[in-house]
Every structure is written in C-alpha cells, then in structure tokens.
Amino acid sequence: MPAVHDRGGWPDDTPIAREEHILSDWERRVDAVHQALGAQGIRTTDEMRRAIESLPPERYEALSYYEKWTAALEILLIEKGILSADEIDAKTAQLREQGL
Image 1 (cartoon, helix red, strand yellow):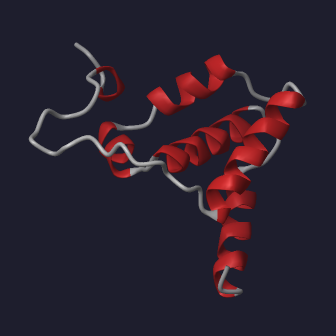
Image 2 (spheres, helix red, strand yellow; image 1 turned 180 degrees about the horizontal axis):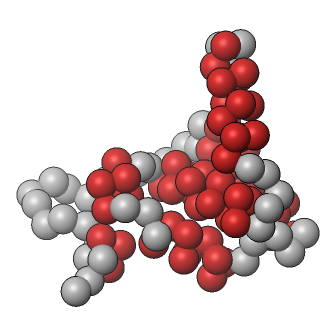
C-alpha cells in the first residue's frame, strides 16, 4: 500500500500555486543547516528522503516543505548521536522563552 509521500497530494479542486515562494528567514536557515550538514558528510539525500518518508502520515500532511526538512534533520542528528532529543527540546524551550 502506498505511503502518504507516494500519492502526490490528495486530489481536490484546489488550484496549484504557481507563484514563486519567497523564503522566510527560518527557511533560509534550515536550508543553510541542510547544506552544511551535507558538506560535512553528516547527512545524505537518501537519508533525508528516508527520514521524511518515516514521518507519520498526519504529521507529514501537517508540515510545510521546510518543516519536513527540519523534522528529518532532527531525526538524523538524533540517530547519529550528534544531538539528543533532550538537548533539542531544551534549546527549543530556551529559544521560546527568549521569544525567538
């Protein structure tokens, strides 16, 4: 049975958005981290694909393109022992407290 990422989107009458997407600052940062981790050999395209495709269908559907990248990078950094889930959660909480 195909997974959520295999279906190409739910069929509906919504038109396809064809305008250019201007990246926000956080999306640019995610892209920079993605590129840096790739340049260091910490992540590969296949690993990213596998991590994104491992997201539960409800989460996959709820996340934007760069949010999926963020989730995948988190999965890979934890799997590789570079960061722990607790470290990521602590930093996230700290940034939220600072209003970032």
